Image 1 (cartoon, rainbow, N blue to C red):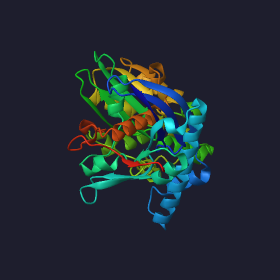
Image 2: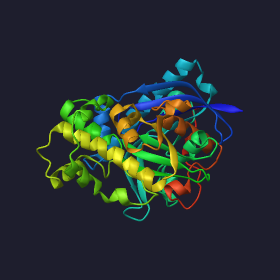
Image 3: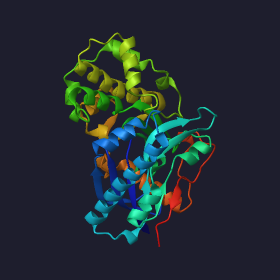
Image 4: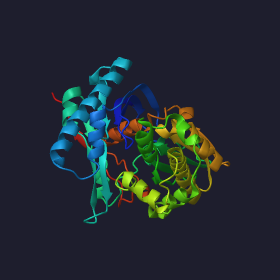
Length: 378
């Protein structure tokens, strides 16, 4: 048996919303995934800038966050309608929408020992606009149970990519942040955030190229890695932390990069050399994570926007000569659709009242049902 879900994801890269209409099997392992339609909507500049500003404290935050949630829900509704029209599926045939929301703060375990994670959204408005049940707020239940609230995709990666289990497989998502799932041959599955993925490279390209990203990594490939800057960035204590661990723009942001440039006395560097160094940092942190936490991995499946960065993919291949590095496209799921499918699957688990987290990945005290359900109107 199978059911149809919509999955919606807007990540820390702030490049927009990816949505999928997907038919999912009832079984978890192996999970059958049939993608019926896939759509992407870039954020309008005004909304993107507001979401970026909400990552730090500012005036009238509650009011601005509420309006940003409304605007995001409308984009989500547009993407949902797009995938329904592509597949010629009626909204009543969809069991639920899994809508992640836009993370603007991620501070688990801080302040009062519990901390919080905050994803802007208006799931009630999305249910009203689409006429479909919406599952949202996936991460806070895990944080309440002592976890990081992230990463949540390792369980999905296990269900889809584990295969025969004859050898260890790692799945690397290169979004705004990079996160890795380790699917061990002994069936143990865990995951963690490696560090910055595209977020710093995108920022630097925006400042110097007035572009949302360094398309294909061509600009980075024209520069030379500055070893002093690279070492200054590698000194960040986060990289040495043991899993479970997660991070976001709260740490790896424009100020963090400025501090590293200052410590390395790199103010006179060519902009393309800084970009090359940022790409090297991302590749190094992923290689270091794999060697330390999955040294027997023979396969690395890469997804996320960074999988389209030829220069970054080349750096990973060069750094990991004993590992087969390939995109998830080879396994039937487009690189920019993996996380959207994952949240469609997490919505299915929530509807069925089944746990969606892996304590080995998040550090929670145990399995928990993730998400809150907003029923569609009658």
